[in-house]
Length: 148
Image (cartoon, rainbow, N blue to C red; front, side, top):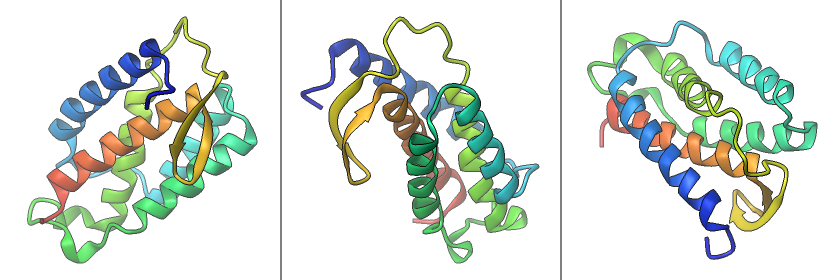
């Protein structure tokens, strides 16, 4: 993270804190949408807010990879009635709720920064925001919906 400007780093840290606290609060609720629906909504939202097709494909492919590792057998007792599809959809719903209220940022979301995440070494600010939101929401879901 040494190559990320302090303003971008501070924004990322603030986003992670906000996401973690609100995600942990709501994580025990079942998602009203399926994972497929949540994925389609997220893809359309990314494309509609300035993410390129390449960025969207990269982010969703890696989100799918990480979300697919969540297993129904590890759901805790509170989350079992929701089932695994709901828990997986919750992660993307959380990202949507946390990422898109951020409007009017003075930092360029298209500027590329040298940062290594998900097998890529140069990421745009908007990619870093998505990855930070995603990781916070995935962590909150794991804590609230899954055992151990």
